[in-house]
Amino acid sequence: MVTNDVNSQSPSTGLRAFHLDNKGTIVYPMTLHSTSDALYIDVEGATAVDVMTLLDHYLVMERCALHDVLSTSESFWILGDVHDIFSDADKSSDGNLHTFMFGDVQIHTVPVLRRDGPCYVAWSTAGELPALFERVGLVCGTFEDAEHQRLTAAIPAGCADFSRILAMESGIVGSAISFTKGCYIGQEITARIDARGRTHRELVVLEIPGEVTSLDVRSDETVVGQIRSSCTGPNGESLAICHLRNEARSQPLFVGALSVKAVRNVV
Image (tube, rainbow, N blue to C red):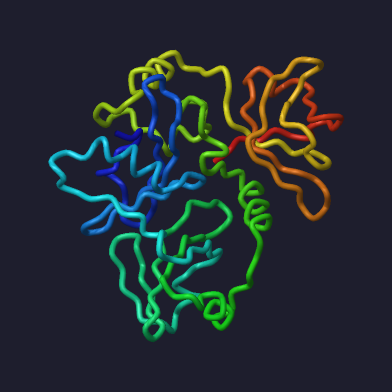
């Protein structure tokens, strides 16, 4: 029911995919990880109950079950290689799912796609993870720190960036859509746009010399794009994921009174 070929994914990396509606519009973006007996679905920016309610419609003869693995756990993003960070712990692996043991504390991790270095979602039922992380040398950051690193790496993520746009406008068609797998919801529209060879809009990264004060991106007096997510760095300049009309890339662009410095592709 998703845009990518789940059966073909490598056990060493997560697989990006979209669940679409019948108009080819993204409902949920996701990263998928296979293990020997389960499929881990990471949907950033959506509640688990909403995703599970949607997927429950496609269960056939109850041969599988859906569970929210984070409902009773603390979860974190860890920037860095968990194998080096937790090198003194006992470890077991099942596909992309790695489990590290510290006494009676189990920490489960799966990788997150990032261009700027390794990153993992980690979760555990233990209540003392921040203290444990501090002991192994991890530094506690903020959500804003993570967003700045993500946008610096030009990586769109979650429902904030992807929802309500066509899959072919995502900017990551090559890594999130298979054109050789079987049918899925929205495939006909997606294939038709691919055959046409172009889209009218695409997700891009904007470099802005100041704080973002408007979600509208303009060329002259015309709105040509909408900002989906943004962050302001330590030097006062901002990075933003924008759903931008393709022909506007070569035009002077403005966010509020600020002139956009550069337009980059997402990855």
